[in-house]
Image (cartoon, rainbow, N blue to C red):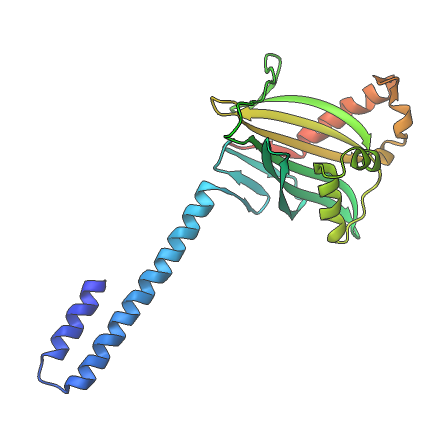
Length: 243
């Protein structure tokens, strides 16, 4: 296209018409050509950035980086954004936050946490996936856990729970203190330095019980075992690995 514009300008310039006018036409053609190439280059750069990174498309979270995965969520969840975090000088990551809320009161959350050890250290994720569940081409370790959000923040005020609470509070959301989650972990890459954790989170209050009923001396009570079983089932009904 650039050559076509230049040939047109040059043929006009030497055709015997007014030289000044032809020069103006030629310059306009060159500027137009450069502008078109600039726009195309920007579009190509943005496209490559999307293809190589992670982004949201509707209800689908797409990761082209390790681990490469596509996750679709139930329509009741809305994407609220993401934030990056760092674990000392050992690892870094980012959290993608989805919520199901009523008048800014959070009923449920879905969090996708991508994490990786920094190249400067020799650490790697040591999970065993011998008895893991397989979803599509990914193996996930799954467990359930119930906790107090305020206690978690007090123990680690710079941790992911604290950052998530601040992220949501800044957007005007309220989060109940007692939460329960179904957690899925997978590791990617031959060096096992890349991890993905999926959190499906509900309010403990929705169970009709309180957190104090779930554990006795760190052991799971029968109440929590029954609740966690159905929590796991609900979590699997609210997201799907499509790739």
